[in-house]
Length: 138
Image 1 (cartoon, one colour):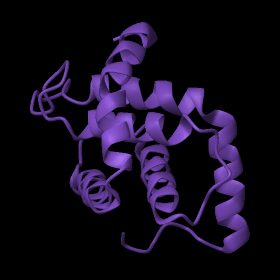
Image 2 (cartoon, one colour):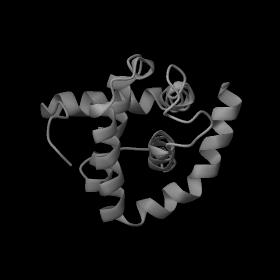
Image 3 (spheres, helix red, strand yellow):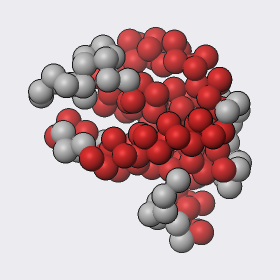
Image 4 (cartoon, one colour):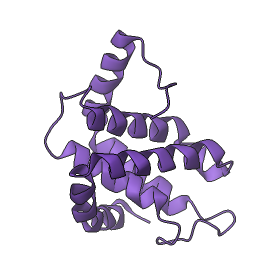
């Protein structure tokens, strides 16, 4: 899947992301679910983005908790939309298809990470300054 398709899919999830942002408890549950999916997935397709996806989830958690606030207004929505895409078992390529299931997830997440590269760098610096390495549970 190319980045235009990834962008199109993300745009469709934007409304759901905005709805979730207004419901912090439900959002925290979804983020917890995403973290568990990353931890328990041994799919090799995820290996290339596993650490960045985990960082994206931690970014969303810190935003939801109100601990990190130095972001562009659209950033949380983009992050949540990408995580929602990752959680969808029946997306463009169903996750259960061996060898291919997570390829579209990787494309969407990579697209978002590339779009938010500067924000992610700032967030990483903030976390490092705090001595936070994402080990705490949501």
